[in-house]
Length: 494
Ligand code: NAD
Image 1 (cartoon, rainbow, N blue to C red):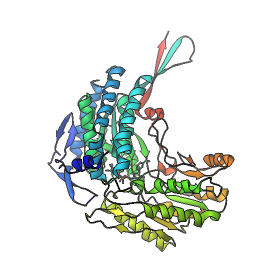
Image 2 (cartoon, rainbow, N blue to C red; image 1 turned 135 degrees about the vertical axis):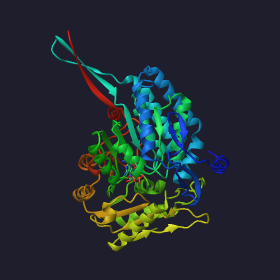
Image 3 (tube, rainbow, N blue to C red; image 1 turned 30 degrees about the vertical axis):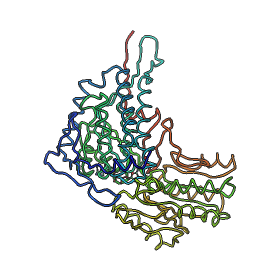
Image 4 (cartoon, protein in one colour; image 1 turned 90 degrees about the horizontal axis):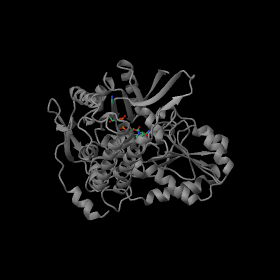
C-alpha cells in the first residue's frame, strides 16, 4: 500500500449515492438526500438518498420476488459458489478503492481498514462460498416404516442492519452466510458509513448476483430501519449495533410478524492482568492496541483494564507510555496509527464520559481531550482513567471511544467478581503464566469470547457473539449458517 495511491484515491470526488433496488440505482421516493460529513476534516463528502418507509418496502418487495421466483435460491450450489467466489475476487481487486472510500466516510485508520474491511470481507464471502455445498440435512433414526428427512431451507428475506465502525467486515458477516444459503437480503447501512457498502453491493451485481437478491437502502435508522423491523415480509432480522436499537428491533418483531431477530450488541470487556503474567511489556502493548485502535470503536474493545494491585503502577505506566506514543491524526496518512472518531456527536459523547469519570473519582493518567488538527475533523487522544470504581459509569457503560478505565483487584476471586459485574458479556482477556488459573478464568468469566495472553483474535472459523446484554446471536463460523436456515421435517410413509 503506497501513500501516493491513497492520495490519488482520496482526491476523487464522490457522486451523490442512491439506493440499490432490483439491480438499479434509484433516488428516494420523495427525492430527499442527506449529506455525508467526512470525520477526517468535518466537510461534506457527498450525499446519499434519505430513504423513506416506501423505499424500504419497495426493496423488501424486490427481495421477496427475487427469493420466491428462485432466481438465486434455486441455482445449483456450484453456480452460487461461483458468483460468491467472483465477488470475493472483485472485492480484493478493488480493495484499496473500497478501503479509502470507507475511511473517508467513517474515519478508521487506513492500516487497519485495509485488512479489517475489504480484506476481511473478501475472506468471509469466500469462506461461506466454500461452505455452501457442505450443509447437509439428516435422516432421523425413526421407526422402520417411515422415513423422516430433516432439511435446511433458506429463510427467505433477510434484513441486515449494519453499524458504522466496520461496515464491510460486519456487512460480510451477514451477507456471506445469508446469500450462501440462498436467501435474498435487504441491507441498511449506518448513516455515517454507507459508501463502501453501496460499492461492495455494486460489485456483487458485477459478479453475477441476480438483481433484487441484494438491495441496499440508505437513510435514517429511525425511518428505514424501523420500516424494515416492522415489515411483514422480512423473515429474519440480523443486527449489529447498540443495545437500545436492539431492544427496538425486538419490539418491532413482536408488533409485526414475529420475525427472528439476532442481535450483536456492545460490550464492556474486561482485560485482566495478573502479577504472574509472563511478559508485561507485551501485555501492555496488546492491551493498548485492544482499546485504542479504530479510536476504540470496536465492539470487543478491552475497555476495562483490571490490574492486580502489586503491579498496578508499573503496568499502568507502561500502557500510558504506549498510549502517549500513538500518533493520532488523518486516517489516510500511513504515518498515523489512530484515525478519526466517526462523528462529532460520538466525539462529544466520548468527552462526556471522561467528564463523568472524573466527577465519579477517576483520575486522568493520559489524554482526556479532543485533538485539534489543522484540517479540522474529529480526533481524540487515547485516554486512560485510573481509580475507576467497579460501579462507576465508566466501568458499566459502553463508551465506544478511545477511553480505558483502570480498576485494581487483590486476587482471582475479586477479579472474577469485578469482571462479571456488568450487564454485558461480549469479550475479555486474562494475562497469566498459570495454566490452571487460565482455565479457571476461561470458565468463570461470563462472555462469548475470552482470550488468554492475547487480545482480539479474528478468524472466520470461530464464532463471535456475546451473552447477557451483548446479544443473542453469533456471526462467523459454520454456526452462523443456522441463523439463515429453517429446519424442515418431512415424514415419508414407506
Ligand atoms: P446504533 O444502534 O445506533 O446503529 C446501528 C444501526 O442501527 C445503524 O444502521 C442505524 O441506522 C440503525 N438504527 C438506529 N436506530 C434504528 C431503529 N430505530 N430501527 C432500526 N434501525 C435503527 O449503533 P451504532 O452507534 O451504529 O454502532 C455502535 C454500537 O454497535 C456499539 O454499541 C457497539 O458496541 C456495537 N457493535 C457491536 C458489535 C458486535 O459484534 N457485537 C460490532 C460492532 C459494533
